[in-house]
Length: 438
Image (cartoon, rainbow, N blue to C red; front, side):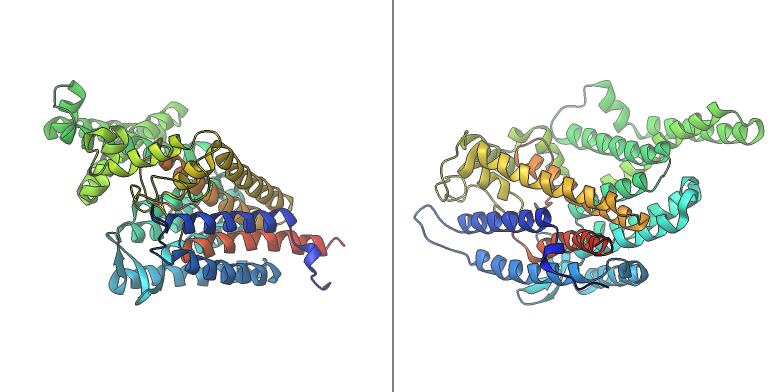
C-alpha cells in the first residue's frame, strides 16, 4: 500500500469542516458575552479544546482504512446499545433528559455516537442482504436495527435525538434498494402520527372542542369502533390476498395497516410524552398562546433572525443574545445569533458551506465501488442534512423545537465529535480509493 500523504485528503471536506467549526467558535463566544461586554461563560474555550481534539480524531480516523469498520460494526453497535442502557441507569439528567454519562462536568452523550454505530451496522446488514432487502422480513429487521436504539433514547427521554434515526434509516434503506412502498409506509405513519398527536394536543389547550374533528378524536367509543372496523377490513383483506392473490388486496392491507398503526402510535405517544414536549408542538402551531413561557424561545429566535436584515448588526453587536433574551443560544439557537449578527449574507455563507459538505460527501460515497461504503456515506450525509434542516427550521420558526444541535456550530463535544467522525469516514473513503488508483 502506498504511503498516505496530506495531498490524498479531500480538500473540500477538510477546509469546509474547519471553516464551519471556526464560525461555530466565534458565535459560541458571542453567545457568552452580555450587553455590557462581560464574558460570563467559558464555553468557547471548551469548544476550542473539543475542536482541536475532534480534528485530531478526524485526521487519525481518515488514515484508518474504512473497510475495516465493517468487520467491527456489529461490536460497535452492541457497545452503543449497552452504553444507552447504562445511561438510563446511571446517566446524568440535563434539561429533563437522562442522556449524559460521566462525572462532574466531564461527560459524553452516547446517543450521539450511537448514530455512527447504527449507520455502520445498518449498512453492513443491508449490503450483506442484497436484493432480499426488498422482502418485508429483511426490511423489518433493518428497521429494528434502527428502532432499538431509538426507543432507548426515547426512554431518556430525548425525542429530538431519537428522531434523527428516522432519516438515517430512510436514506440507507432507499440507497440500499428497499421497496419504495415500504419506505413510504414508515414515512407516512410518522407523518400521520405526528399530525394526530399535534391535533390532540392542540385541541386540549388551545381551542374549544367545537369542531367535529376534535369531537371525533376525543370520543373513545367512536375511536374504538373505527379501530375495530379497520382491523376487520385488514383481516378480510389479508384473507383475500392469501387466497385470491389480487393486487388491490395488498393496497387495502397497506392503507388499513397505516391508519391502525398511526392510531396506536398516537395513543402511545400521548401517554409517554412529557408536558413540555406537548407544549413544543402547541407553540409551533401557535407560539403567541404562551409568549412569556413555552413560546418565548421561538418568538425570540424569529425576532433575532429577522432583526439581522441583509448585512446583520455586526459581530458581537446582536441584542437578542447579549441581552439574554434567547435561551440555549449556544446550542439549539446558535443559528439565530449568526443570523442576527451576520444577517442574510452570513446565513447564505453557512448554508453554502453545508451544501458543499453534503454534495461533496455524496459524491465521494457514490464514487466508491463498495456498496457498504456507499450506504455508510449516504447515512452520514442523511444524518447531517436532517440536523441542518431541523435546527435552522427551528430557528426561523418553520419547525417545532426539538433540541437538535447544528453540527459543527452548536456548543457541545459529543455532537462535534460525531460530525467529525462521520466526515472522517467519508474522507477515508476518498483517501483509500485515491491511493489505490495512483
